[in-house]
Image (spheres, rainbow, N blue to C red):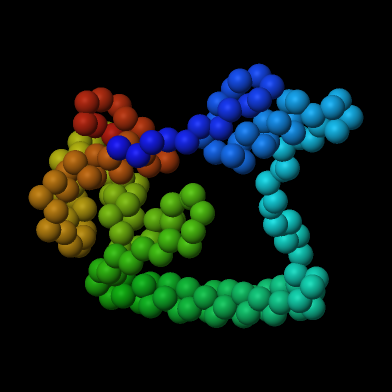
Length: 177
């Protein structure tokens, strides 16, 4: 095992493993009162607060904002076209595929036609009065919702419990408000 060097302070007898530590101790503890120096602070790079050194950030923000506005307009036009197609398909008796689009944020997407929550909402509003989860599940499947989920009643029950406009009136029984 290697022998560890020890550097001893000549004034107080304290020992250090590195000469630099002894030097720091000597300059902070045993230097004359006016000559004592505190350890040097660690150097940090200053945070960049703006893009001003690179020509300013305003032109970049303006271009990004214009691109965003153009994409938002395209998305609105596409959403309108998709909604028109969905209406045409449901008017002809077909069912719309379940496509959910989440656009960020914490709020879940709205119930779109073709999704399980949309079918549940449709069943709950068409049936006035209390209805059991198994009956809601059967009505959703009868309305044209396609699913291979073996635990579909459990999923329907979870959606019913969290759905606004629906309240629980008994064990496994819900009613539209």
